[in-house]
Length: 424
Image 1 (cartoon, rainbow, N blue to C red):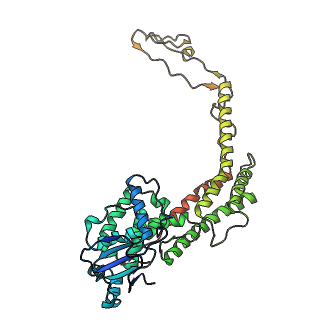
Image 2: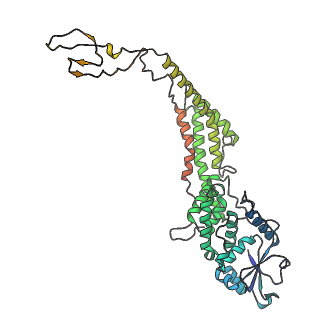
C-alpha cells in the first residue's frame, strides 16, 4: 500500500486545514488528511481522568484530526530520515508537480494522527525544543504507526527511549491492563524486554487471536501469541479434567467427610458456567482465556473451602470445650515426702519437703520444679478426634490451586535473534 502520494493539484481542503511550520524554508508541504473521528487506536487506548489544560489540548487535537493538518517540511530532511519519502521525492516528483506556492505537496494516506506526525517531523528536523519530553500511551502508539510505515526508527530512536522510560516510571500498570499497544510500540522501537513481557501478558489474558484495533501488528506475532495461549490452555485443561475424572471415579475417596463429593459438585457447578465441562473445550479454544479457567476453578473451590473452614472451627471449639471439662489432679510439690540423714548419720522418717529455708543451718535450697500435670483421661489434653483430617481430596485441591503456576511456563516472544536481527 502506498502511504504517501504526490498531490498534482492542490488538495481541496488545503486552504482550510491548519498550517504548521517545521521548516520556514520548506520546499515540501506534507498534508495529513482529515478524519471524522480521531485515527488510530484511540478508541481502545482511551485515557481517562483528563482535566484542565489537558482537556484543552485534547479538544485542539480532536479539532485538528477532523480538519486535517498541513506541515511545512524540508525534502532534504525527509529523504535523509526515510527511504519511503526519498523514493517518492526522487522518482515521483517533477517540476510539473510543484504547486503555485513552489512546493511539492505530499499527501499522506488516511489513518495517521496529525499530532503524531507533527511530533515526528520536529524530531527528524532536529527541532528538539519542539519535541515533547513525555507523551501518553495513545500518542506514542500513533507515533509508532507513523514511524513504522515510513521507516523513521533511526531518526526518532533517542526520543522514543525517553518517552518509553517516562511511561514505565509513571504508568507501569499499563503493561497489565493494555499489553496490546505495548506489543506494537516495543516492536517498532525495538525493546526486547518490553516485547517479551507484553506478549506473555497477551497470551495469558487473550481469549483468541489478539485484536490489534488499528495498530498494524504483524500477523506472525499474533499467530505466535495465540500458539502460546493454546499451549497453556491445553496444559491447564488436561490437569483440570484429570482431577475431575479422579473425583468422579473415586480415585480421591473420602469416607469420613465426603470431601470428594463436595469438591466435585462445587467444581462442576462453577465450571459448567464457563462451558469447561460439557462439552470439553478443544483447540483452538475459541473465546477462552487462561484467566477464565482460573476463575472457574477458584469459584468451584469456594464451597469446599468454606466447608473445610467450618469443620476446622467446629473441631477447635470441641477441643476447647474438652479442655474446660478435663479435671487435673496434681500433687503439690511441697507435699511430696523426702528422706534425709542427720549429721550423725541416723535416718529420719519421711516427711513433707521443706519450703524455702536452710538445711542444717548452712545451705539454702530452691523448691523443686512442679511436675507435669496428670490428666484424668490420659490423652494429654491436646488432641481432638478428627482434628487435622486429611484425605486424597486435599491433594486434588492442592493441584488445582497450583494451576496458576502454569503461567510461569509462558515466556513471551523473543524479539531479537542472537546476532541482533529482528525475528518479527
